[in-house]
Image 1 (cartoon, rainbow, N blue to C red):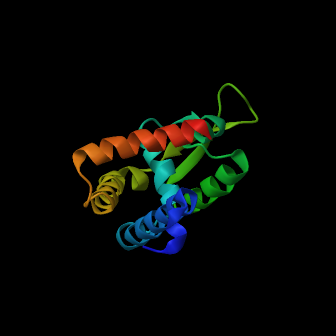
Image 2: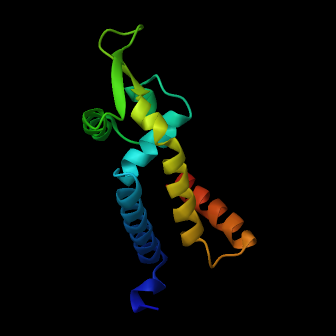
Image 3: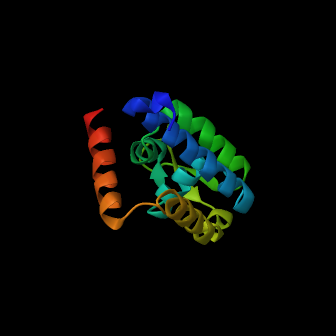
Length: 140
């Protein structure tokens, strides 16, 4: 183990870096999208037709990041925008048929990454790991 890994902060950052690189490779090979685009699709699979601000809340992304991301996803024909019936200045984001057709592949990639990432862990370790990650997120 590397000497810098005696710092839990560095260990967590490096583990996330490895996780992100692995997910990025699998996503690029299988689907041709980025991990952040996958997160947006995953969120929209749970219910599309939501406002950009609501999508940002559900994805935990700020509006400036999300606007550019939605622009790129729209160019790739993964989502489309429609005017909001409640607010002329806003719009809602919907999945395209192309994105809907990718759902099984997105879920497969999530499963591949999870399985590979946790293959050396016991069921009990995974439960504790998820609890610790949630606590870290809530604390910070």
